[in-house]
Image 1 (cartoon, rainbow, N blue to C red):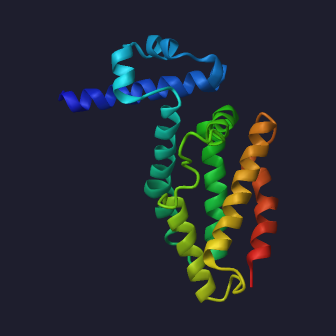
Image 2: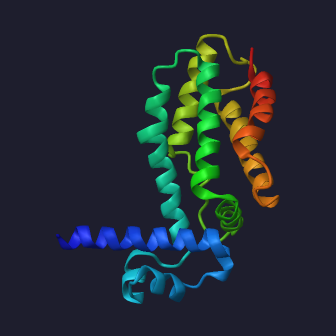
Length: 196
């Protein structure tokens, strides 16, 4: 196995172990030493790939975007009805977040996003999520499905804020409800408000 492949494998193992520990014990109760021990790695290897345990979340965000690009968007490509496409996207997104991340990881992500010393990943306009929503709302405005008195950017921002809101609420309530179920009435109201 090449050195680069081993390095990538080590990084993946550290990240996976860390996320499992965060989910099980809570982010603040997990130390770098504990991550290293459970990943059967070294401090040098950890700091070769991450500057801190917070960086593991940045990696997870990239995985979420990878999930969008590799799995979610291709599945939605064949759907012609834009409103159905948007609702399907929201359902699949929330299922993924609930099943693969969990409420405590989401809570910790929000804590990190509120740190003003860090650059916000949520607000990066280059994320595939923003491109997908821009394209969908642009097309919806051309087809006269969505409102003309709001710009595409404004509609994207409304939807993104609604996403953040339900995720924040779900994390604050310690995952006490099924995110994939409860998102439906919320986004139905939001989408109804964006329709022509």
